[in-house]
Length: 308
Image (tube, rainbow, N blue to C red):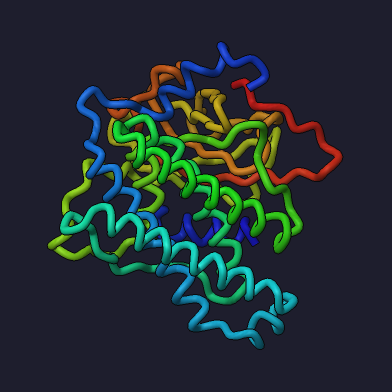
């Protein structure tokens, strides 16, 4: 299910030892000296919550209990998803109330699911991105009350993701010892793949989307994968993998291919950069991405933190 959702997303454009990973972790966050205000962080969070709310609401209006049953799911699956939809609506209400007149309205979206199973696969991916978004944005929040709100939303989003992955998908509920924090621009790049347009009245967010990165079908651990992206710089490029608090850069060959590390697990993000040092990856050397890769693992597999 998740692999199909990743393919659909691509089609529409879209720590063992802490010291060894911490520099890369900080760079994945890509902190800015002129960081966003608390209001802008809440607007960013509301933009993502609006997207999630609409994803669940639209699918539940389209797929009734019979549709879920026909897809092979027991009745409690739709019931739990309905509860999650209510949570996302509550998140929107809370953030909108905090922002007041500075709230941002729903955009128009294009979600690439075609049936119940592809919808469920897509929700798991988007919940993963939501967790990474809150984890990455927390550094900018100065108001402790707002930070607490963000923390309790993050933990709920993580529960959503884990339940959807394990209870519905019978897959791993987590990646490793740590979730993967992402910077504002990386998250927005992923979210923008689903956004067609937004109201002119919405405040402009201090974010941008990087060029699209896609990964060839059938990618696997230890095998060569081809990465597709526009390359106006014509420079030596590296694919940088992010999982938890670790990251690793691998040089692309002349065909924009590289061998995927064998120690990645769960949901992994990848960007293309001209930097061979993961700790030096920044806005001025990111060429494309991120893309989402998924490496499921069973309950009998060792699950250490990725050290990079």
